[in-house]
Length: 149
Ligand SMILES: [Zn+2]
Ligand SMILES: [Zn+2]
Image (tube, rainbow, N blue to C red):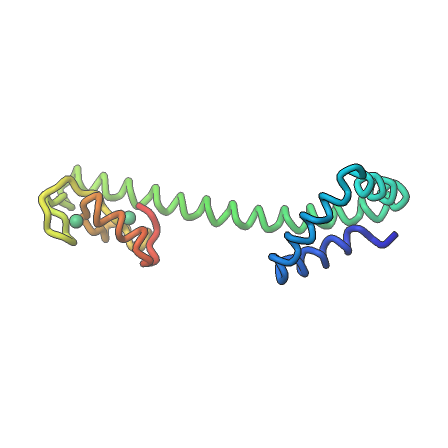
């Protein structure tokens, strides 16, 4: 039997390129192997037992690689959230001190309505646009690349 790990990786690539064909084939395969369920799983399990070291090494490397990716993702997320928090509290303070004044109208559509501060860039903490709920939503979902908040 061939290496099921490599097999699965190459299968994944093939499947992504031939999705429809693969789905149909898998459907047929499932029907044909209805009484034979677990046979492949059994073969894989046995192969893994026989190649214990290899499987462990692979799992270790996979974990290491994914851990690094996960950590850098978490770090980015935390940094961004930190920036966001700082920006928001700067605005709060500026509102209290009177350095910033919250307008009664949306700065995008001009409608009289409660407004929220929108940061195009959290690094520029006091650069906010005051937007109504609707315009704020539009900015975040209208394809413009803005960070939330
Ligand atoms: Zn508006
Ligand atoms: Zn916003």
